[in-house]
Image 1: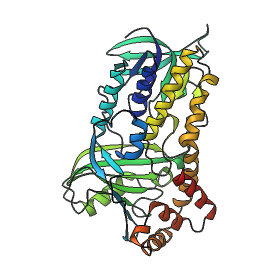
Image 2 (image 1 turned 135 degrees about the horizontal axis):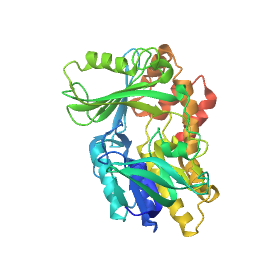
Image 3 (image 1 turned 60 degrees about the horizontal axis):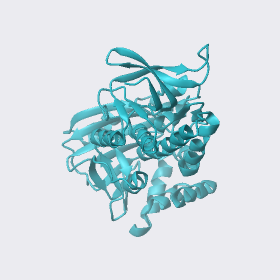
Image 4 (image 1 turned 180 degrees about the vertical axis):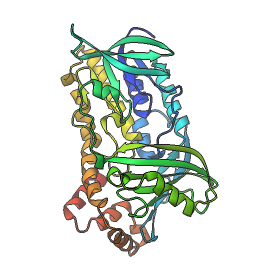
Length: 398
């Protein structure tokens, strides 16, 4: 490990690897640090992704390896058990094997000259100024039992919702309890009675209050079964209990081969995602879809923008927050504004009673199969919130 780089990226998830790759492509000397022993491990993700958006953010590169199963539709299950099948007729999504996918992204970054270190824990930052209270100019990292001071012109924090880089930089990373989803997921073997072409989303106060429960098939007999509920509800009954009760009912003979727990921030992007010499990417910046909790492609998109802006700032030798602000502006135009709209929609939908959810399902089922689209589901759900229908249209038409 050298003592100086142009860019240090902390966290080798999809956003971090893509930021590192892009900055290196544009001529920057990049160091990518991952605190775990292996990129892609442990997996803390439902692993669902939209293939069209993935292709767009990867272009002109081919899609990375790590797609376990193609998805061509969704089954929405109302509280009363009625199923709304949305069949898009062609593959529009995928369930990933994140261990392979994340590893592949890091290899693509390495191919562009990115230096990668695993088992590298960033425990502090280096600041300019005699008193150490100036702008950030590097990180302090523990790697294989030794401590190093490594300097950089720009530090990109892609270190998850618990982002230490964000806190070190003085950025406000606080999340309100109502916007923090309590999540648990179990990868089950020996699952039955599901169609691998569809994802299943279940709603209702008895199943997943203030959120939803999902079944994401990875093969004919293996699926990720998980739940995300608002922290306000998790205080009364844990996500673990809701999930286990569902598994006991639906898949009593399944075997749990992998379990993951954690929190997901379902809120708009942080107000500030740049500071002097610092940018935040992905979960660290709260760049997660507030409605679905998905954040793989959005993290990669943010990483692509951040890497390009970082390389341009280095080329003109200006690492101030003003110089890095185009990253925040481009992100807002690309996805940030839509996430604000989705957050407003989520606030309304997650307050629905079971009766309202059941009525929505019946309204959609009354339509012809070809008219049972996601946009029509939202329009039916929000019929009593006409102002939000315009937000739905803007999200789906943008």
